[in-house]
Image 1: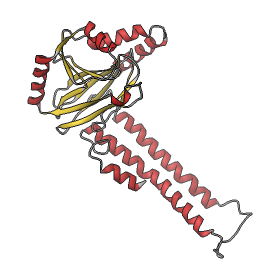
Image 2 (image 1 turned 180 degrees about the horizontal axis):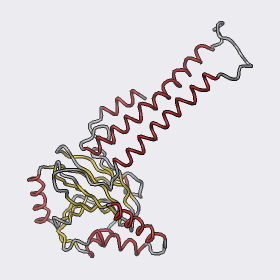
Image 3 (image 1 turned 60 degrees about the horizontal axis):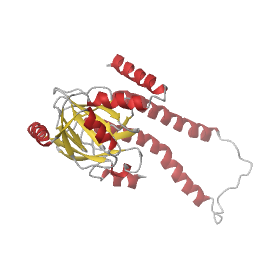
Image 4 (image 1 turned 45 degrees about the vertical axis):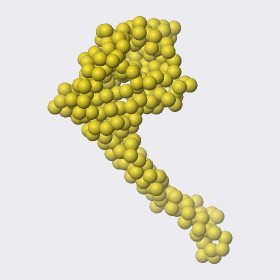
Length: 290
């Protein structure tokens, strides 16, 4: 286990090499939970090897006690240590779940930007409502700026994940989830779909470019200049085109693309009467919390 952990730590990209505060907290949570669990795993493995060696057939010093059945000290040890580990890890999980609440805005002296994420078969659409642009399979964000994501799916349930930044979150048709991230270093990172969703799942990845403020502004201008226009009709055509896509850009004719994706998917799933009620409960609960 320890050699495997060391190999993972050597990875140049992923959850063990975070590039943002959310990823840093998630990494620390993993390490904090791993250490007490090793207090159980390592002694068990060591004692297994020691028992096999000590009670070997050639060891005349090993005492055979067929009627031995109870030791208060051993019973206390094998119960109290796992119990303490469970209590400690449970406390970590509870506190970490609240500290890393994806709906909680990140604390920063910089104004956050808003990005709407829409999963399709099998590509990602990133909509920047304030900038009036959208991109397929390319997410560009400025370094050091909090990013507030709204996420949904125009087809089937999926999972949005940027290992270097943290925060895997589900995208569900007819519903919306939220996520807050911040990138502390400029660079190009890997984004992916973390849930099997059909034939093109293995190619459903995207690149994340973390740039300076000036470079981000230039990218927005470039997307406006070269992008095709996007409205509800062109969005529906993009959803209907199944398969992977190269990076492409769009200029928004209106800012209702995300809401259209949620409502149109809800209508397609109208046969499932539970979906509107579930979506309403999530929207109302998120509104009351924030």
